[in-house]
Amino acid sequence: MYIGNLNIKGVVFCAPMAGISNTPYRILARRFGAGVVYSEMVSSHGLAYNNDKTKIMLDFLPEESPIGIQLFGAEPDIMLKAARIVSERKPDILDLNFGCPARKVVRKNGGAAILKDLGLTRALVEAAVEGSSMPVTVKIRSGWDELTKIYIEAGQACQEAGASAVTLHARTRSKGFSGSADWSDIKRLKENLDIPVIGNGDVKTGPDAQRMFEETGCDAVMIGRAAMGNPWVFREITQFLETGEEHPRPTPEERIAIVGEHARLLGGIIGERHALLNMRKHTAWYLKGLHGGAVVRSKINTLESYEALDELLSDFLKDYK
Ligand SMILES: Cc1cc2nc3c(=O)[nH]c(=O)nc-3n(C[C@H](O)[C@H](O)[C@H](O)COP(=O)(O)O)c2cc1C
Image (cartoon, rainbow, N blue to C red):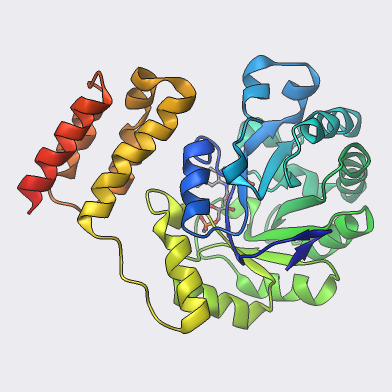
């Protein structure tokens, strides 16, 4: 598929997730076949005001590409400046977040609150397109609440303002993450737009992805929560779509080995000690359901070195067998 002039090889994308989709997470997702990966949402305001912590969030490695950097914000002039700053880093896509339900974001009229104002929707996309040398895409929800499902009008506004694709997380803001995503919204959006539509919400397996393609006609699917501690999901879904056959789930050995690898990838960026401190959450996800995995999780952030981690993991594997 094409996003603007960008030829994308895979149709299973890795969703932006704040606090999660950093470089190691994205490298692993790409390795297992994610067609596009996205950064965590980055504050356009932080970039425009030269905040160092915000600028670090733009860092990525060549093997992550194709990568989309996602911005949030509600002021077009700030968005224009931020888009220029992102362009200097040369990612493949600039994505705008018009779907975040978090109170601290919508209070300042960002995220999903933008869907309440189609004029602002349009102005933000126009500003991003003006400031960006990459294709601009937009990620929306179905609307603010069940009474104001304006995803078709919002998608059309984005398209008219120059967006090259729209991702729809088929829930309203008021639904948060509850209930199930309403894929019929994705179908209707696809019928009403000329640019590609990426479907998102509740895809966990190959059969789910196939059903989303069949029911909605979307151009790609995006995977969020099902990829946490599970980068293999991209390989499994891709194989199922291509052959109709289920790829075997990763073995306990593969799941255990990836903890050490993720820690080292993270350590390459933030240093060994900090990486080990930060691995607790990912380790819990990687080892979920493996008997005894909780012990590894509870010890990992007390370790001083990769060697100590390797020892802990190999003891765990011995006991596991
Ligand atoms: C912890 C967490 C953080 C998220 N952060 C972002 C974000 O930064 N930007 C964004 O557009 N969506 C964000 N999302 C929403 C996901 O990208 C995705 O739309 C949502 O999880 C639905 O897809 P899923 O059912 O495959 O998880 C986040 C979701 C979760 C669970």
